[in-house]
Image 1 (tube, rainbow, N blue to C red):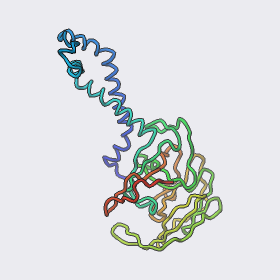
Image 2: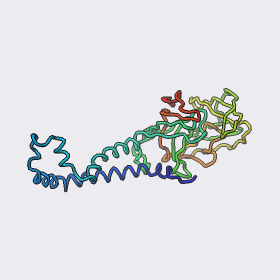
Image 3: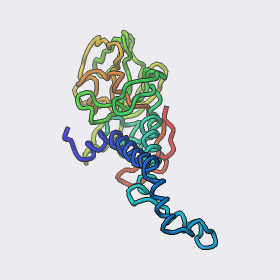
Image 4: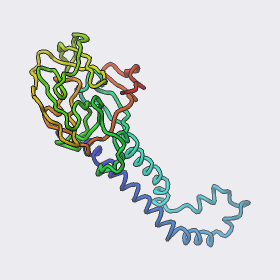
Amino acid sequence: MDMSFMTVLGEYFPLILLILAIGSGLVVLMDQVFFKKAREEKILAETPDLNNSKIFSKKERLEKLKGPFLIDYCRSLFPVFLIVFVLRSFIGEFYQIPSASMIPNYLIGDYLYVNKFAYGFRFPIWGVKLIPVGTPKRGDVVIFSYPPDTRVDLIKRVVGLPGDHVSYINKLLSINGVSVPTSLIANQIMADDSETQAVQVYQENLSGDVHGIINMPWAPTHNFTNVIVPKGEYFVMGDNRDDSEDSRYWGFVQDKYLLGKPEMVIFSMGDQGVRWSRIGHLLN
């Protein structure tokens, strides 16, 4: 995958925010400790009537005592940088669906709110888990760093937990030797890159998590048998089973790569405009 400007920005954005927060905070701290008092004493010496409320209003007094542009700029932006860094690193962020791999449940152009606290309190940038909160359940949809290229974030469904034996034969998923229940909902025509394709929509029950999946009957099956999921790793698949590059092709997702769990569609834009009905849709 090419490393575009947006990819680079997305990868380094938390680090950039941290540097800006620390840098602006240090400027404000240095001014408060070493320069502010002397600067204000000099201004008061040059304008002895500055504290006289009959001559100078409070606004005029603050304007006179205001520090240099850089210091004033850092004082204003430091709390902004800090709050955005904390919210984005520990609480939640937004993710845009980039491909058709999760259709029919997630559409290209969906913007999701992602709970970054769902699977643990992680140290920003390095992703080290400091406080374990929970682990993915079978059927959870997760956002994670793409293992072959961690600059890229992906969204898939967890189908295999640590220790599970996963098989996929003739488009039928099995976990620990038990076939995952599926039922055909509809045969339909789906647009794909300006073309139309015949697909089958199924309802899948993955350990109680019921969701839709899509199979393309004419597409070849990437069969495999009895793949054992290692400790601390997960086997993930897209809901659009024949149009998803996932663990079948590049392997497992380590726990350290988990970024969060999507919880709500906050906006959705398709070829025909805004999908108003999807906005505010809560996700399982």
